[in-house]
Length: 617
Ligand code: M6R
Image (tube, rainbow, N blue to C red; front, top):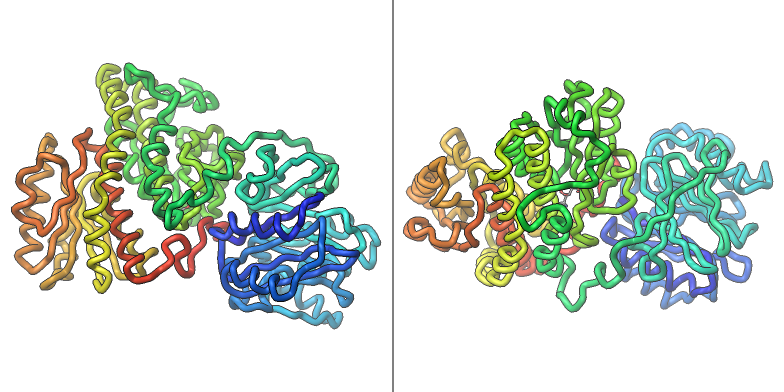
């Protein structure tokens, strides 16, 4: 959580920092602040609340021209979201050093006690301020900022990206990274730092991802990277494959609305180069895993959190069905701390939009230590997860800014299905002709997703009409079950109302007790054409809840002539393969939740208490 940005160069630093923070605000919006060095002196402005409050503060107390500085947007961990706890934090009695931090310093109590014993006075309740005072103290002793910085970061435990500027060294920003993201942007006579490339992509597309336990010494004309041990580090540059317009609203009322509309492209780009016109699937990025490795896999464990875990739940149906490899889906944080069985023949598939979710990183590190291979499904170039995995299938959804995941989800499901088809082909588990038929069906998805998006008015109207609902339940079977859970999550996080997703078959085992007169229930109905006869079972479930007063909204396949008799409303989606319907049926649920939240006057891009990227455990 928290977004950080740093800059050295000829441009107006405040403008660069505010522009970067605007693009990073999705990472946290409890407070924001900047420190720049101007005419030899630190100038700091910070304010609780969203970035707009900081902008107001700078307008009322303008900052003189500056060419170096750091900026922060906060998701509060230690200390309430107040002006005082907002970053940057100043270090030392002379307050010549300014620091911003993303992460948690786990040993801060012990370090704070040491400083308090020396008489240090603290201005905030944060763990971060401890690091500012420690570095200032070491600098006063050593007279060398890099040495002081390195000494202190080696003493910190936990997760941190830290950026520091000091009045005595007005040409350099120092940064350190452990277990939290940091990317360098390389410019011409200027350089940037950011939590992700969004911080600087409007200025440069040349980037370097900073590795674990590395320190960056950033000047306008040079970038030096050393390890926490002081030894030089060489790093590879990469080119950001999207531009700033991809991360702007482009005329849409919200990022979420734009990202819902981006979904046909997200699916198409994720398929691109991976399925040929005959439907044959190849995933060149899987080269890190040999055919031998793939044949030896005896179990797949998908680790992920939140929406990404539902993508995993959906992918599981395809991977098991086609490749016949047993798949279990685990929430990363539960998996990591329950002594799971992992062997060298286990393939861990880690799904993460950001590639920085700490729970997922900890799960994959743990599994690697036990000898497993890790395959990432990730949307962010240069992310830690991708760097730490044996292979990465990138979902080419483009930058996802709204906190609620939409286009990343459909891209993750697409990638999961591609993986299933690929594994099945390599292992010879399903006839190639059948796999190719499915591959060709996948190619139809982008157009079908467009069709669903063009028809979202009904889902939006139903959502808007339900602004006063106290609770909405979601039911589904097979892939419809994780779709139902995702529908419920969207509603919880966006509209702050009670919502639950249930397996329709589970209804009679308890949840049906929740049904009373007028209870809205959204049901994901499997295809009438489906061979496993799930359709009649779900129709029976609908009848059971209607008999008890439920108001049913069904999401069903076009041509379903039965469902309308038993539902108040039916939203139809195009015909596709039974499992691929997950991608089409989830989209009306996104639009429903967005419209309901908007009708309640809520901010759909930045729901309360949340941050886009959960970089603490
Ligand atoms: O970046 P990740 O995909 O690892 O994030 C995982 C979850 O935190 C994320 O999907 C979260 O549940 C979304 N806010 C849901 O919309």
